[in-house]
Amino acid sequence: MPEEDHGRPTYGAAPLVVNGREVRDLDELSDREFLNLFGRAPGMYLGRTTLRGVTGFLNGYDFGARRTGGQGLKGFREWLMANYDVASNFTWEAQITDLALPDREAGAPLTQAQEERVITMTLELLDMFLAEREAASPGRQ
Image 1 (tube, rainbow, N blue to C red):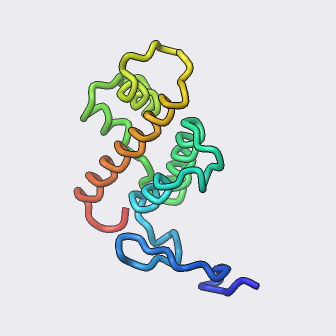
Image 2: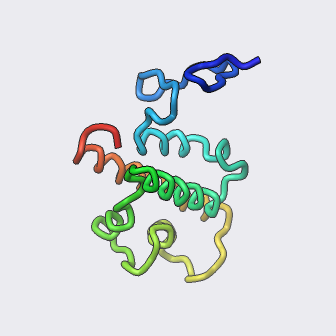
């Protein structure tokens, strides 16, 4: 039988520790902290880790965060344009794919290795963006 913790079942799980603090509710995490957890093990959230799955999860996270008053990924695409030579008429997903695979033929299907490269770059760039955003406005993001 699960234990109750703040009205939520815990099933005897060890508490989550993020940046040296014990977290009992994921709502306590900043966007950067939560997305870093996601980036460490995307398969835990998605099942099979694919580029489509990762971008779908991130877009869903963005929508949910903004819908409830958070920032989500607001400004990420514009940050990419300000910091990298990327097309302004592309989505952030396409911008990062072009950055990660500059010699790729447009429209060509991605190999598994290419998908992994784009996923890695997406998570790295997202962390850089969120770190800059946190530094510019300290407090929970």
